[in-house]
Length: 357
Image (cartoon, rainbow, N blue to C red; front, side, top):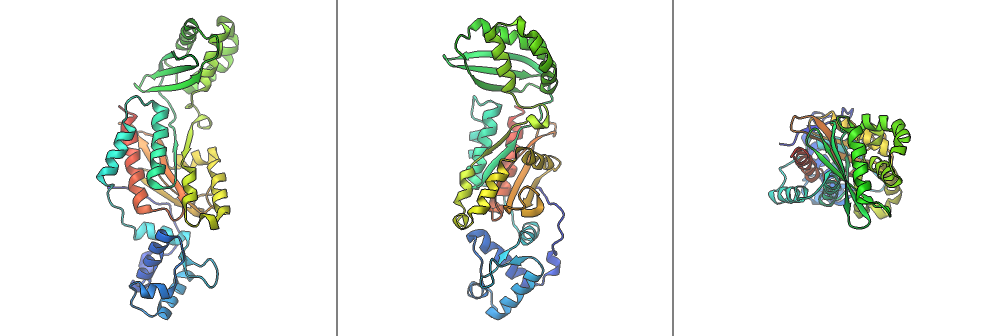
């Protein structure tokens, strides 16, 4: 069962709508989510609403005055406002279970052998982006376990693999370009140097102390080993909030919206929003406080108020139910909520299990 968390809203509730208004409102929203186009009273009267176009039009006008519907221009039909979408999601949306074939696909792709921490995060966002049709986004967790071991391993002639093992049993890998002249002895020297100074410390503590210590200790290392140490530390994210990784995949999917060519300015603003790393991390950190899927629509977040986009996100947790980070989907307000909500929820659960294996 998917658990949903909603921000507080000031729009009228379903209890304030009579049966006729509720039915027309639901049909307008469902049509918008399917087509992205406004719908008029005549179309509704031909589509199963057994009322005259005039009666439907009067009800739609009432819904407009309540702030639940709006019109792109005076001669058009009606579209749901962001408040209307919120009311629909809160009270009328039916969220089912994720189909078994999609569960298997998510499991297979995320549990593939040989994937490191970064690869899993990238795969999770790419997977969500592809299945949900929006941009997948994930913020990596604050790493608070101490470092147990560091190793530099040569891969071919031009790459080095940096392996960091943490005291909680997790392992992270980073690939680095291997500079010319780096010998096996330089790799070992760099490994020994970091192991002597990082063991038992969190990345945040290690980076803070190494800022001053590295310049003093540089003389202990040959040039190649010193370069490896410097590049190895720079390759890691974790530590403080400003240094955490934000992964966004699938921006091109946002151009697949059938209304995108008519609304390129909105898409441009959304692309600009996706570049605001610190604000996006802050938004996903808000999700960390929830115990379920959280949904933001349009102006409910300052970041996406201009582009009118929607965010569906969920925290992923450790085996001890400690929140590690958050993952979600960002897209136009007419996201397929019924499909995306269980996708995000299940992916977050699998990601949490995977990071604790």
